[in-house]
Image (cartoon, rainbow, N blue to C red; front, side):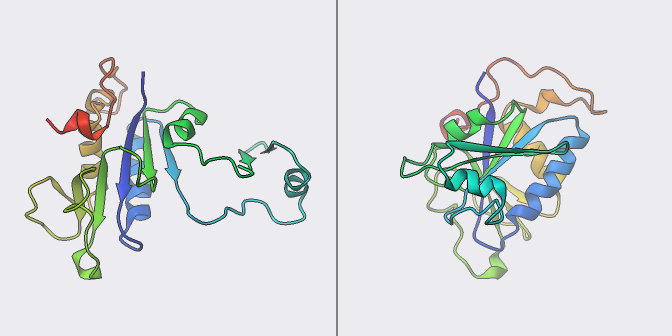
Length: 192
């Protein structure tokens, strides 16, 4: 089954990370497993220069996995190869009920835009068909769902309904099975 994927979009400083972290806490309380993919246009520096793992990578290792009793990380240099697609990146992750994506704007996934009119930046939703709802700090009359940005649980419930995962959580947080094939959050699947 294709994992449920939903994007969180918005201009810098709009509150995307704050919303995602608040929703992650709520999803965890509901017993759901949620992965997050954050895209960056900048080179990633995950290892301090001079540390063994950085030296292994610089010496030519295809991938370096750093492991501890608490977490692990894999560093993979592309060495001029094309950047993997979002689907390829999702496939590298452990299975989850839902994957939230910040970035990967050229990928065809449904997105919720975090928009604060007071920031003075133009919103994406009027010109971006992948935006299916807006989470804002003020009510907006925009012809699509407008969710209260300060109500992370309400935004999270909207995402579950959008992705067909609303049956994955019972009122008291017990896990229920989602219907087969329902976990698809793609613009074409939700436009109707």
